Length: 515
Ligand SMILES: [Zn+2]
Image (cartoon, rainbow, N blue to C red; front, side, top):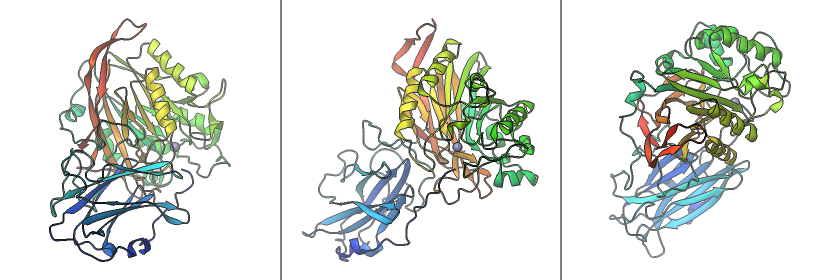
């Protein structure tokens, strides 16, 4: 955790910008307008009906940072017109950053994606964030999408997560993830086939504070996800704190976590491995970190992304099962770097680009069929990945990674592909409390991957909704990302120096309903 996000909206934005619009109502034949808004993977839909007046106008908050307001009115020529205002949340209050007028009559309906407005991009330099919106005309009561396939949620019931990767050029401007059939979701619960390994991954597991109290009281914060954690052949998570009785909190940190060793009882038997490559492993110093490694070892849980020295910290976690060799590499790149492992001292693996590339190439040479970097990266509370995350993910895939999975921002950050390889930028929190005031901070994903020697076969996510104590709850019916691989047009590619043939695959991006 870091500096709290202070942005919040006043109950009502001053109506000054709207005062000049008058209170006209539209002709009876005018249509309802429906606008689709996205920021950082968060989708919202809002409507303005012909009877809407400027002072009772539709508005929607996106990503806790943007506010979009949709006003219908009459133009100077008495034609229907719709105005869109976008405000950004700044320290001094909401700042208008975009205003535009659109008329549904300007563009013939059904002429492709983007409705009558086209896809509008509103860039906000302070946040380096970009909001996109587009509007279409619909008949009153017919609140459905005109193009593509995606949410038809009611205006106040936005989907829990409808991730897309912003600022990615695609063939069509309307790039929200389509809904998928359930065909490949089912495979995650079927018995493993020869040559296939199913891997379950979760984000931050923080077992101090609320979750620690639950455990101290005899509870089990992981109970509701017990079945899901066991739904694969191998389960991996990020242990976001030391588990120890020794050590002192680092004075340089605002938040220092340490869990009582009794928490091992909820981890044991559920996780085969835990990443310690994060910004909290060193919160109580080297001695506590070493005690953590000992508790993991005693519980039969492997660690990855940290160790007693630099070599051990960069050693892959090898999963050898069903004739498949999977190498998982874990790295932290969120401060403090002072807890990086050294030649002869303990600590975590730091994601120095050259070293990461060398580790991936070494794992391939050592016989890995599938290589998965598990990253601790990105800005906290940001709903979209940074340029650094995008750049490093691509670098790792270019070096040979088969997919990339990340965490740390405390929110999910959408999914993307590069060269057909899946990137899950952030799984969000999984067990963590104190995020009730952070939009998206109480929602995480459990990721299920089905892998064979050519990489990713299919994957899906299960939504985890944390309560005030940090206990994750399943959300049946929630839509979350999923996808499956298909052979590309050039289906067979030689992997240099290995003599084996690897099938080139491309993973699609879709959304599946949680069971
Ligand atoms: Zn973290």
